Length: 317
Image (cartoon, rainbow, N blue to C red; front, side, top):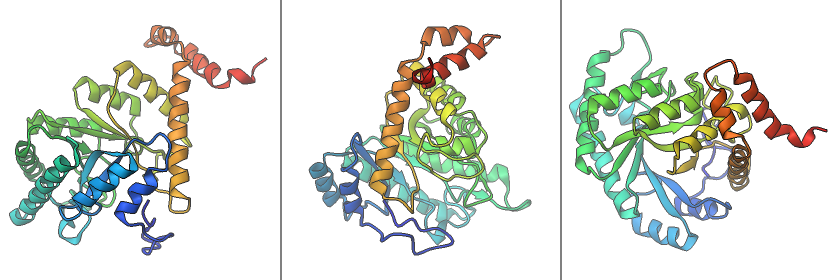
């Protein structure tokens, strides 16, 4: 619901919408029950009461709060992994303040995308020291409110050429180093595809470790994080993901994270919800027992037929 600004058109493609008006726009999307708010850009201590009022009148709740320690110049060389202690301390303070606001908004889930914590060139950073600083800061944030779930969002690159949290595996490894029970993972489908992961496999591994806390639905061609409408490109992978989410009995939030600068945002969100709903309905039609029986051996082509028949069955005959 923003302006759609990019590096080629910093002014955006549409007029920027105020934060409270974005909530009102979101309420027009059928099937959307909550919103994910960014702290401190879309909600802050000064606006939390007005935000709560707008949420109530719009019939929405806050699913999670995204903690922004990447969107200003002070984080240009990282936030939680920065070499300067003062910068890291400020990053921790911003996250702690955001956690307080999340509590006021009625959610026990915050997310962190460490978009500036990484590097661009060989010989630029001390990799081990950077991870140590990052772990120490997150351990401090996690201890601030042990009842608040903190989910880490990984992504291979952008705006840095390499981000510290670039894959599901490295993120799971880092969480093990943190050693805090309230730290998990936000699985952004587009980021997983961008990392050349099988997104269903990533979801299964994360859930097996009790780390899958939030899912961002979007889509892309695999070569960039385009944040496209889900189900428009990687159709088969999304079907497999949803099949396994059913098997895992995942019942937490699904969030729509799309970038549609040249399209009506309400219509784009509505199409996203419609696509996701249809994908879930499609997986209901699959022969679950047959698919599970065919896994791991030579019977997997039969699974492709089972899924294909569910998709195209109405066209046969």
